[in-house]
Amino acid sequence: MKIKMLVGMAGMAALLGVTVGSISANAQDVQNQPKASAALPTADRPVLQHRFARYRIERSDVVDLDFPLVPEYDQEVTVQPDGYVTLKDVGDLHVEGMTTSEFTEAVRKAYADARILHDPVVTINLKDFQKPYFTALGQLGKPGKYELREDITVAEAVAIAGGFTAKSKHSQVLLLRRVSGDLVEVKNLNMKKMLAKGDLSEDVFLQPGDMLYVPQNVISKIQPFIPYYSISAFPQQF
Image (cartoon, rainbow, N blue to C red; front, side, top):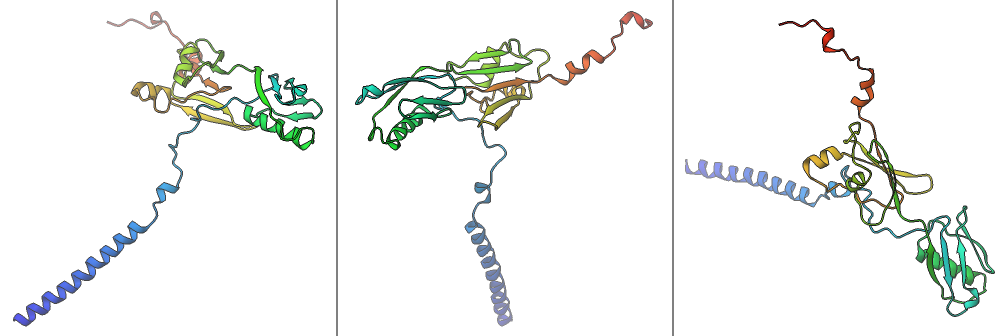
């Protein structure tokens, strides 16, 4: 009897050992597997949050070029409608879209490649430039173009533009940002939900040139086509 019990216990222990070992191995395999969620992009990844962007040269900007070691090359240039400037003794150079540091390096390289100046030292100063602005369109109290003088979020921009109207679709405020010459990035903001919950974590900061568009809500679109009947047209029943 004792022998049977010992054999039964040994078999049970062996069975449990295999089972526990298998579970431990599976757990170890799962733990060693790379986390897929860390590599996969999420739908809620924040976008359009590039703050403190450097100013980029635009058309009609006026720039002073200062060559402290060779002042005879000091000059004032204006960015032409095609994005080019004309440098003394060098010729045309495309600078539209550059930051001031990129512009400085491009001028240095242009004079060095032309073998006019060896390792030139140049300082660039923006004399007249496009003032930062944003545009607010659609169902707003005062749509138009506004200067962007400081950090402004979408909610603040809506308030600056006169706030929402009775026709505004608060749940679908579009923020359009030009990424390149032919590419525009669009962010759909649910301002109704954002303001109702008091959660401004997705209240995006504007950048120069951004455009806000507030569409018209459905009710205000169909309201003109809804027949209106006076109460007097119906028989009064008491």
